[in-house]
Length: 424
Image (tube, rainbow, N blue to C red):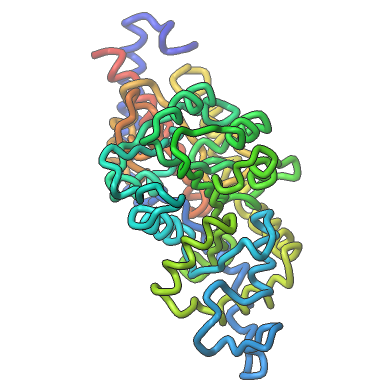
């Protein structure tokens, strides 16, 4: 029976029972962190052989003869550009391979456009006092942090099962102060949904009032499938080429959750016009990134197909963790009617909407019981979830046993927060 159908007496009885459960859990002394999408030790072990793959000076040359131990090659060695281009679905000449962090490349790109004009005759973004950025919600907190840092007015855009609600987007881009939109098109963080073909076609066909409007297309989970029955999305560059908007998207990706976070390889891809502006910044910023690391990655994987095979090993580690999360939510909360949650086919998160007005309380209760979650509201700009309902669960890091314990805690806390509100 759903909590909303309980009598007042039944609600108080249930509240008493759940409070007892909560007190028992607090006595276990748990200390489990599920705040970020961090790969587990089992996943990191999959890539350990890569560390020994360059065994001598003769192993350190790229296919074009570049000595990867030395300076140079601003945009990355050719074999790594080719591999990352295949991952991003673009031509190698559109790609720059950077350091280890795609987030760093996104930050640098926004920084570049803040100080330098993207379109001839138009002012840099930093000269627009009322600059705005579209933020599909719930979304990735670090994206929102970047645009907040640069002083953008962030405008939440609702998401449904197909992606950003395009009627809203199409209306908002009529404002010339709207300069871009964050997008995680496949297994979106945290909702886990993938943009439908119709949504991607409508995005590609946008006619923004700002000629320097840019899509920050963070394809972070492009090969992070959990099942054979995985999502496929349209190629944004191919769709934008059809509509004459080839300058609109800038796409990003990395191997941070494929090999080693902090020691992976990041890449971005953009049109020739965009890349001219971006590369003009990088030529002053660096002489070149870690080519030995690029070479290690290529030697380890061989090519893009090798990356796909490697990701099947990750799926074998991750899929049981996602199953624990969704099965625990089903078993403990579905009948109460107080939660909605996604069942993603890939990515790194499960998005849970608890009873409106209780997300902060759920996170607080979980912390009291020894389980650390991403802060409530983090999936919205300025940490302001208008319904106080969304919570991002990251299943990857903990062992199966500890994850099961953590989800038991979460379910009890979601019940307790809901019952407190219903009986207040």
